[in-house]
Length: 252
Image 1 (cartoon, rainbow, N blue to C red):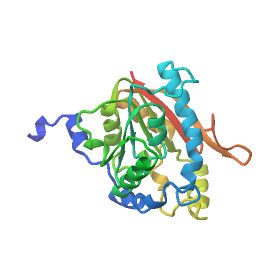
Image 2 (cartoon, rainbow, N blue to C red):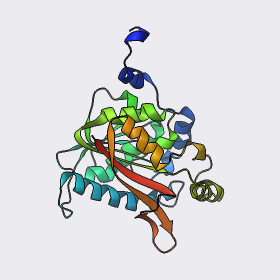
Image 3 (tube, helix red, strand yellow):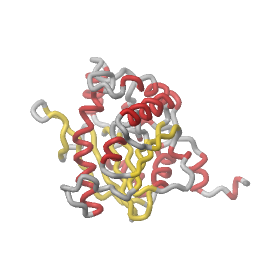
């Protein structure tokens, strides 16, 4: 293939989105991932509101009954940057045929072991989004991942290729604000609540920046909510996006 014949899609597919240092960092946390009081304790606290947002988005997008235990029955889903499966396993319990993808081999090993221990059949794979070969999924999720990849636009292109027609994409990521720097890095990492070196504040994306990049890839942002914290409520969904936020995206 000559340079002149390389299409933008092929170029994006050839670009690795894995940051080796980030993969190594998260791989060291694999053995402790499912410990709610361990190094991934913050993710365990974030998971309930993320799942509430996800369930509401699923019901709205596909018109499912909120009382249905398996609204993803008959659908496929991929959790990109799945870690050891904190979000991936609930997707399987909601009825989806699920693939979990992660850049750290250690995370995939921990995810497989945990899924086997609870009787869940999940297709866990080691690699980046660019490793998918023509596969498309009804639901694409990627939570707190995009701020860790080596090439944001190539990563979004990979997510876009993985989204089936009529499908739903759900992302979450920290906002680049003084509050997120204070909460996640100065306090979170400084006090050992979050493992040191987890975040690089300069790589955080604002909602406008992420929306622009998704729209440039041919997607439409349909819903955007904040993930906030208060002493009374803990982590919860709100209209305040200054700390962290979630969004849904669909084909235009």
